[in-house]
View (cartoon, one colour):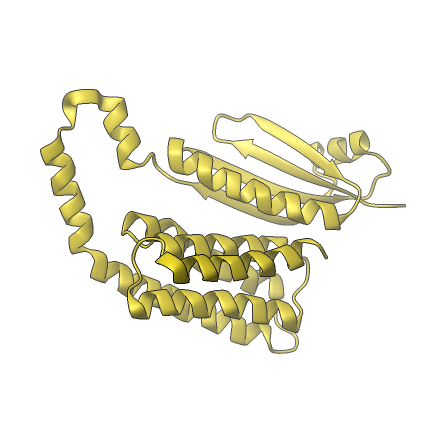
Length: 233
């Protein structure tokens, strides 16, 4: 009996949607695209989006979806993306209540805490490095380690843009997609993740704010190629 993969998307308002795939090679890339979209939606509008992938031992999509709803399908992986509305949207929501002086003051607070971001980012990068070292060892609980790696990568992704480090946010976004696209972890996958961690470390050490200019474009192009190879497997 062939397995059918089901991806379930649940919002905080209790609405749910399902998407079915006949094999994981199609489900993985869709999962990565879905995660990116969830980050965009929650980043703009706030809220929470929970995504889960199930392996249903069924022969058709309808039966697989019913198995997921009935709790009879095996959960393969899950992610939860949540973010409050950004400052710009809050200003739009409250109109003239927030004036230019308040925004300027808020921006100053962010600017004053950029050193804190560097500290936080280095701590997350250290955690990512440790995760990669564990993944190289035989018998490692890869799923648990990947979950921890995803959490650290997501933290960097969310914080980077707020502190003006747009390039590190894009690299972190790439790393999150790579992790979500993995069904298993090979030595080449570890090297791919290491490339992302090294790239983020360079951004932090050199304090490359904004998009990183020509260097930033070159880095993102290289990471696009890495992600494409993983998604096509």
